[in-house]
Image 1 (spheres, helix red, strand yellow):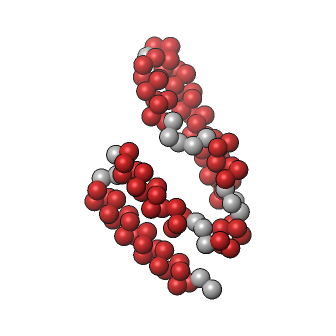
Image 2 (cartoon, rainbow, N blue to C red):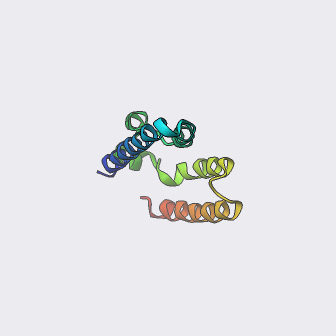
Length: 106
């Protein structure tokens, strides 16, 4: 269910970006190109769908958000999306969450 909602969100987001870029391309093509470049890091639904494991698979392997978070945070820091203090705070929160999840696992 959550995977479906995420894919629907990505679809809607890309549809909106494409419509805005299309409107801008008539009067402000440079701005439309900049918008497309800026939004290029957002994955398209067809890129994500085959890679989403089912909830049962994620629980069985222990793979999930806690495991993926550090690499995403490093990438966000490299891209300039996060400041160093934000990065540190999120990494500490991720570490705590991972520890709690390990303690709760059977």
